[in-house]
Image (cartoon, rainbow, N blue to C red):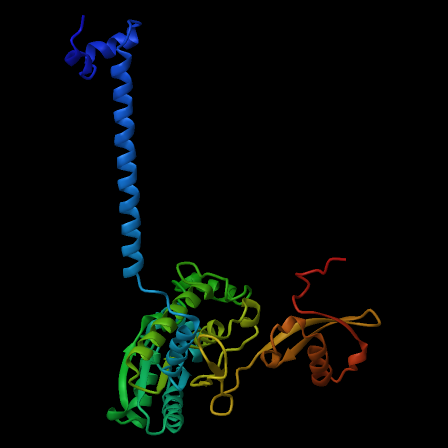
Length: 362
């Protein structure tokens, strides 16, 4: 017979082996072992639950509560108020490439300089910008191309005192669209862009308008963050290129690519003025001031169908003046077409904004 002490001992390897080989196991010892394991697991589970509850309470206590909507609104309003009061977009003066496009065959775009007329235009633009800025301090952003650098120098040296200029940043993100290598016979690709939509067409070894849009948007965001952080001036002047100016307006006013294609380039040393208006909702509270600055020219070709079945393609001027969504403003567009082309608005049956590329389902 087994002694009581031996019977109370835990099962050894031999007894475990006996359980699996069909021998009679020590059932009392096995039950005690299972009971002991259950108790251990219950204790561990209880300890883990308590520890998790304590850790959760500590994290909840230490984690700051998210600000409520009123606080977020106040922060947003404060940031909007710190934005520049005026943003002045200026195109460079007349360049050698503007005067003679064939120069692009043998001279890099970034090396195109101002003509004599371009220098005169930039000096006049400087006086105009100085009148807008008054005695307020100004920050300049300039494209690194030669013609924009020369335009900025003429503006600065003839119209501004150094004490009124906070900073001049030469930023490659607002440079002209890269047209690729246009030397020799490859110059034909430059003409091909006029047959395609400029926003989408990508020049061989160059950029599309969409590429320029991306880097221009990145520049705008970083420039505005810098201004709200430093707020060293109330006026920002951007000396850049016609396409870049249009793309800045596109991202600011959320134009579609179709709307972008209706907008014309500004003239050399043309000036667009963005005035801060805190009554405008959104992240960037700006409106185009066409009294202080130039008017943004826009036009679109529309296919007009008359009640007698006749169809005509008519050009509508001042397309941007129509409130968005513009393609749904049939009455407004009809009246503008009638006024611009001397038509009877009652005779206009339908207007196709998409040149036949979009057919209404019937």
